[in-house]
Image 1 (cartoon, rainbow, N blue to C red):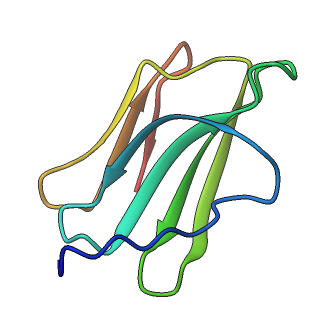
Image 2 (cartoon, helix red, strand yellow; image 1 turned 120 degrees about the vertical axis):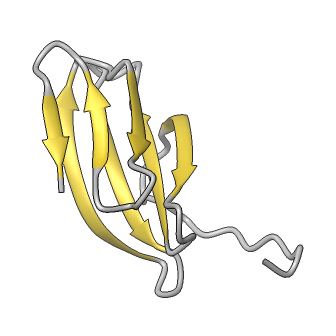
Length: 88
């Protein structure tokens, strides 16, 4: 990392970013975001840093996940909420 900050737009509509996490290899940025004033539509988006493109998204609806985290090897992204889900 060069110490330079480069911003890019995660979505075309204003969102509340609940949390962000980089993958262990720093190739991806995961963003848990939602629209709390519009029925709390929460989603987890995975962005490829080099292309600035979304590579994956899952919607949680009104249920805000308790947490999400990458496994140490970066092969898994784990999240916890009422319905347990694991993504590979």
